[in-house]
Length: 556
Image (cartoon, rainbow, N blue to C red; front, top):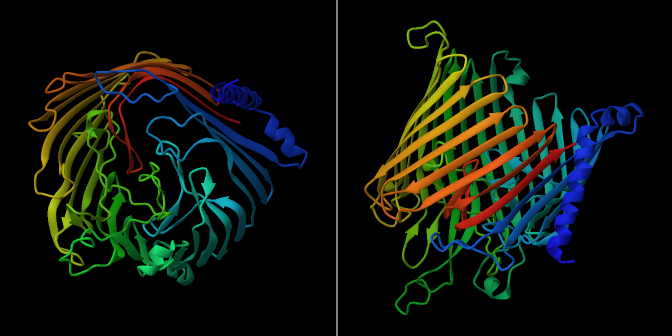
């Protein structure tokens, strides 16, 4: 039996077992009633068969197959909990980091949680502040899992002072790295101490030390094995108004010196020392159907990696210890996601040097209530967003340089009748195709109509019509999607994204899904364009591929 067949058989067995648990709704209650705790879990498999496609130059692995599988089981008994996660890649799906391979028990922990105190031993996830200094998390869509293997303690004193401390080794691929992180986070709620009723005011701070054993050649160049960083934050919330401010000193980073090998270079050192820092301000108001927010952020040398020595492995998107999302509209439509924005955390090479980015976004939402002139009989929701980001013209300053990205979008959601709802959207995006190396930008306008019609309580259709207009890159695109839903079980869709301005290529997709209780099975086929896939403002680069996909998710 081949490894691929074995993994697939194990995946099917897990699926059947999990489905049996999911269908037995009384199992948890019976176990709990015996005071023996209860078990929860989930299983997910994402398997692909890859086909040759000469028109798109699709990537086809030697096995023509890729399968990512996850089984998670947790046990709870009053204040005690424990859990494990098994992952199997047979082999890893195209576009995911190739450090994910074979099968392993990747996560396992035990924890004790009281009202004010908790302690965890084993693997865990954590975040300090917004995550700019430190975040460990799992995102299977991106292939990110940098969980920490170690220990964490947390204590909360009357919701006034909350502290947590951790130590451990971040996960890198299927194993845990030799890198060690230790840190602490504290929050002091001044408003809770004073007894304010309608105001929340808190001061927060974090510190993180990363240690990585260095190669002798790097030690000789003056690189330090420790990187010490900290952040300071303030949070204010009063009568719908909020303000958050954060300053991060991420410690000293080391970058290859592009001029070290030049005979006339003034600085002959192999590495340049750069201190990472970031500033973030978020403010706004929410109330009476209105939501307004403004985010301003500056990043400089903010790349934070698990390991300096990833080798030749394909890991640039997942070798991370912090969270730097794109602060702009996170789109779900096909054409609006052709060129998603990826934040610049600092670039230094022979061709281009840029210490980071500076910019922000303004977001406004208003819900026109029923019975008003614009709201009509069923109301109307209007949302607009403007975001723009620039390189930093001079290191250590707030002066903007070349534009990196700009987006202005407006979307209107209207429930016309009990059966018909529409979303109309326009987005004007401008992006720098050289990532700020020069001033040249591409401009594109996208319009989207999202139309939902509900024939009965169990039968509905949804259609998307999209068009992208541009004079640059591959010129104009058009896209369409039709989704037919038979609630609560069946859903069928077909879509096509067509570049009629340059390549004349169709990127067609189709599929069907079935849902029963807590289990969902989906089968699809199609072409996928090379580009980026994003989740939560973080993106990974994927090659073009064509083929079949089977996805099964279940929980129990």
